[in-house]
Image (tube, rainbow, N blue to C red; front, side):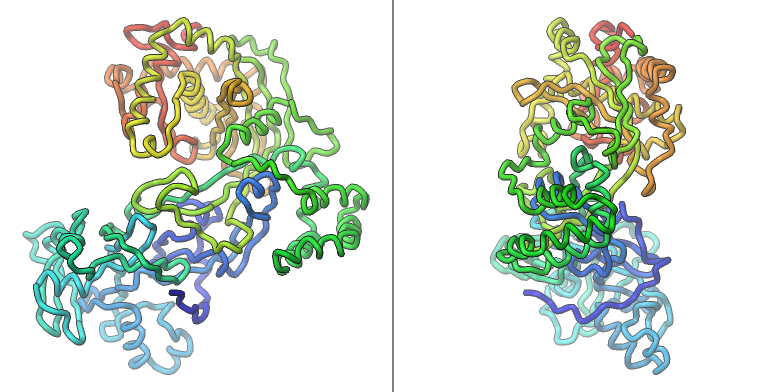
Length: 615
């Protein structure tokens, strides 16, 4: 059941705004945002008032859309709806607060703020209202207000009265926790506390395990104003709990030929944007005919605007609009990473004059004097697009096919919210033969990797997404974290502004890869200043690598850390903790899992098992 959106009300841009990255990550569509005066939910992208288009054809095809868009004017929905006055303790939904406000406010105030948006205050006490701290979520992604009226009457064992009037009170100073929070109905004198409200199965128990359906999930999606049937019993959670919102974000490097200068100029032209809008307005079955009919005219107009040859523009547009690529590569597949690996290693080359959003420089590896390192490439320009596709509640997900995934857009919408980062990076390739020899000669290496692989298989995510955690992957991932930590000291970037991208596969997967890309994950529209690339040159990088490995020999939590049999989330790390190898979660592709210093520098018992022990 869809609820009609009555209208939009302008909010203060200073107090009610978030950064583009926040609008895709923690405050994405479906997430609650705590602003100074109220809590709101980010609405679905179809209701946003302003967007800026982002184009990456390879990424868009992989996700099944035409383009991406960065929000410039986000729309929010009011949720939670229950507020209470800290003075008179009256506790009711916003609809009732607004109704009282309209009866008591002056005409001038109503003209300025008809729906009590600017000043959410109690009409009698003139105190700022406080939003309810508790909401309910279910495994299907629904988000509802806590059933306050039903709760107080059911716990008091009285029927719901005709006109419930609730008050929210705190108990005496001696009472603590949920037992000290009291809900009372002044119409029928029903009274109870919030004791047991956070018990996992409390709502099912109150319905006598299915005999009634009073507390079943209402199936509300506040971000798109719809209610749908749901047979689940929800769980009570605090409004700011981490389990309320798990965004599913994919990222991609823009690589040649999608990153060349001509393609970039075409996508940034006004004429191209006008074409995209016209195509978007057409019915799906009429789009191809419209493109063919106007193709020459559009190509001429774009070529004239950007100062390029019409033939080159037509060739580029033909690839975008007319050539059907049946071989669509999934964004989570190894082949998708292989394409990036080939671009970063120089196997996919672009002429210097065509360079746009991607530029790399191959270095002579003989100048580095480093064992096990096959090649170093300096990525002077790189663009990374991060797209939000959906979210889950209660449990995190890794894929759009996972149970509990909620899509943030309508089926017919042909774009996803995203933001782009222009920066720089260092790409390091390692000798796969050396890695294979190390694994074969050290049985303890396989044993440690198998321990993590078993722990992952027994975890919640591992049961839904089985994978083999190889020693090569753990070594590359741990080294990546150590290098990011050391680079942050050397080049002045904060650790949180650097990020990793791992390339690890075997010949049976399509290509043997063993590489790490460390890049700046935060920068402005023009990129960054070159400090990271400078550290990748022969006079700096060998020293940084040796320091990173040397620092891994000790941890302030040793010997507990180095002798660990499993630590961190689901025991997915061995010798790795916050004092040595863990990074801010914005840096890591694997949520700070699959790390082990033992595979870098060895352990106390067996110091020779580390891949870099000889460094």
